[in-house]
Image 1 (cartoon, rainbow over the protein chains, first blue to last red):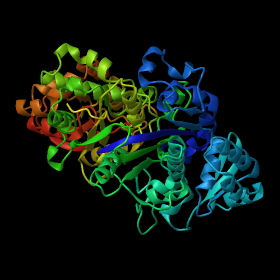
Image 2 (tube, rainbow over the protein chains, first blue to last red):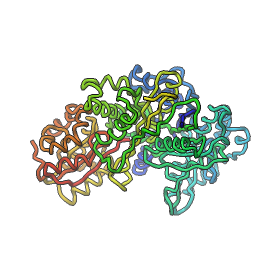
Image 3 (cartoon, helix red, strand yellow):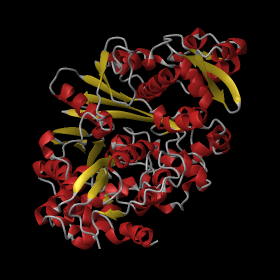
Image 4 (tube, one colour):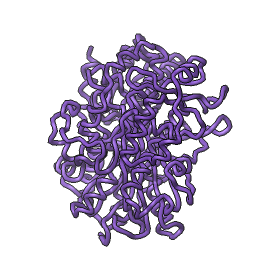
Length: 478
Length: 103
Length: 43
């Protein structure tokens, strides 16, 4: 039996990187003056920390508690917001920059002394870096940082209004190794490493880096070079900087469904006996920072897409934790087709049928959990609710719930969106930590995780994709 | 509507003209539907995209509007549209289009 | 109000609503031709 025994949900607050998000960087290319507009709408760390969806993500509150908080949530600052939530850290930007430098094996990153010192101390206080690691980093002087930027070889890294560092390109002619691409990849690596280091802290010695047999990474970056743009193996890079030595790792790529695919693959490796302990890790998506910034600026809102998210999950053979059911996976085959109904039959009804469950036998559905406060001002609607309505409507069509029972179903089995719009992170897997906690506390027995991947965006197919699995507390059968 | 989409649509109508061209939308939120319809009628309202300032005058309908669904093969309706029709508040989603088409 | 027969359609679907392929199939059945198909993904 493959069970989940530990999960870390982490965030790094990176307002200085919003300018490098895909949408902002393209707009800034056309209109550099926008940088002031963006700057005026960036949040402080304190505001980001106290933001209710932030606390929901790191486990300080449950997502359902967001229902009782008045919108807009960015005005409802939570008073006891912890920089280390039950599920993981909310790193401030200077701490993130210090960890970025820590993860920089190719010597691309320069960070000035003041920032690096402060970061190293803070990270050490969090128990995330050792003193040996702290002392091993060499700061750069401002001259060297500015020169690299002036020569066009590097892009600046900001802390507020100050340039405190830079990251260099990897090659003069390689589009896959520009400074922007490398920053994106290194940011994903750094937040993956953050999540994994926090996971080991949570495990408190029961399982250490040397006890891990294999690593599966499922995030959204593309690590490679001009001859192979998406080479991958971010898993191994993350493993190295999380102190893992005995294992190797590999990436799982399926657009936003990547992480969920990685989880069931980890479970399969464990349940079949290939490995005893597999870690799933996902770093954050720099490209998605500030994606809807225009709408937020227009609505006089802070730019809340200013956090990079990471997740790390430990899957083991037996142990204290819910099991991943491999006998009721929801798969969107090529033959499934694209009709909304066919997709949901494949991802929800099929698995329920195989498990002998009714729609209402699942305590909670975790679907695309994007924070609606991000998406609604941009006209993109409330994504989780849209997904819940589809599930409920299908249930109503099949007679599993009454026709007028949609609202009630969503209230009981759904929840408000809370995840940062970090693609794969928001796609169901952000709820694993909460589900495990709820099951350990006896509040839930069964949760269905369903993620979608918009494959058609890559133009290799018009198909979409999705995957689902059920998590059940130990010893529970239907 | 995203800029790449605007660019591709602009290309398509540049080649083919706008005679007899209509947009049929499938979004599940009134705001998304409204933004797309406005862009196709009078240009990108955010003035950021290839359709900024370009008034294509293309009318938009939602696939779930009664006037559209009644023309669709019933078996196809069952397979593709019955579920979304139940899941979204069709009247709410279609509302912005009525105003935009009128003016 | 509108006769789809002979119309040239921009089919702009959305992943969590009605997607582009579904719109395409449906309007073809009503006699329209397709000028452009897309499925928007807002996240």
